[in-house]
Structures are given as C-alpha cells and as structure tokens.
Length: 268
Image (cartoon, rainbow, N blue to C red):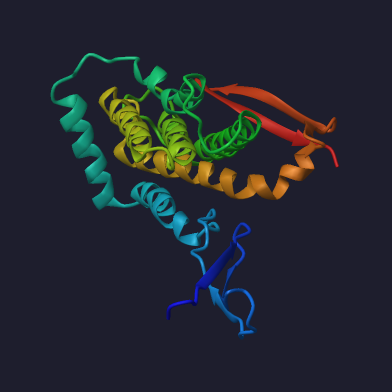
C-alpha cells in the first residue's frame, strides 16, 4: 500500500453516565470519499448510591423481635439469667462507668475524623441532620418501649430494663460511623461496632441489663440510623430552603435517663 496513507481518527465523547459514542473515520489522503464507519461502545456506568433495600431491615428487626420474644419465653429467659450469672453474679466484678462514655464514642468519631481531614460521605449540615434524626427516632422508641414494658433490671433498681438505651445509642453511632466512612475504609465501621458491642457487654457485666435488652437495643440503634439515612433525602428540601434551615424548623436537644439526643419539629 505504498503511496497511500490511512489515517484513523477516533473521537470519544463521554458525558457523565451517558453512553459514549465512538466514531472511526477512515480516509485515504483525506481526498477520496469513503463510507464512514460508526459504532457505539457502552461504557461502564458509574457507581451510584444503591436504593434503600428492605433487606437492610432484616437483621436489626430480627434483633428487636428476639428481645421482645425473650421477655415471654422461658427458654430465652434462661439465656438471660445464665449470662447474667456468668458475667456478674458468679464473680461480682467491680462496676465500671466507662460504658457511659463509650456509648457516645462511635458518633463522636465521625466529627473527630472530619476535623482531622478525613472526609466522610456527607457534608457537616447533612451529616448532622441525619444524626439528629437518628437520635430522635432512637430515643423516642427506647423510652416509649421502656414505659410500656416495665421490665425489671437485673439489679432490681427500677423497671426500665427493656431495651438498653446505652446500647441503642452506641449502635446507632456505630452505624452512623460505618455509613459515613464505608467508602473510605471498612475498618472505621468495624471499630465503631466493636466499641458498641463493648458497651452492650458492659451493660450486662454491670448488672444493669439482661442479654435480650442489649440485643434489642442494638437492633433499635441500627434501625434508627438506617431509617434516618432513608428518610432524610426525602425531606431534605422541606427542612432546608435555599441552603438554609427553614424558619419553621426547630431542632432541640433532649436528655432523658442518662441518654442525650435531639428532637426535630417543623410547622407546616
């Protein structure tokens, strides 16, 4: 093919997630008329946030159901009493108050990591709104259930045993930490859940809760945060207008029975 030059021009036009169209235009010295060859190449779609799956409810909902059923089941109540005996009654360990601090550690870590320059999934405003919504759901559920069930604590101090508020708070924070930093490293979520599990263990060891209380509390905490992440995008535009909170939206802190949270109210 001496004396002939074949030039192929390939043009890729890629716009976001749209299909990339590729054109190859063979020409002979750019003078002769030749048919254009045109084809379409599909590029891999960019990853987007997966829609909320109902399967995300299964594990935390099962934990809540287990805790509720345990109160009326002789077999499951034996598990509660056996664990209470193994962890507390047999050795009578010295009680510790570190669980009062650990319950807040996972959620606080989200803000500490951000201050250290490790960015999470959401900006400060959205992250805080999600967290406050999670706390509102969790605290409302926990304290309403405590009043309805009137379950006695292992130490007999009162009838606010079911579910464990400390554990619910810790696991809500752990799920919050996991969701914010899942794309950075799974280790953050693992660390958060380890702290939350330690909080639950200490509630049993300190003779303040039964095992079923802790399991149900963990389920409520996880589910509260999952619900907050699901609901927030749907009501975000109603809460914030022009990038600022609406004047009819009021966010207030709440404190009850040793647990701290937030309440959100809006006038329509």
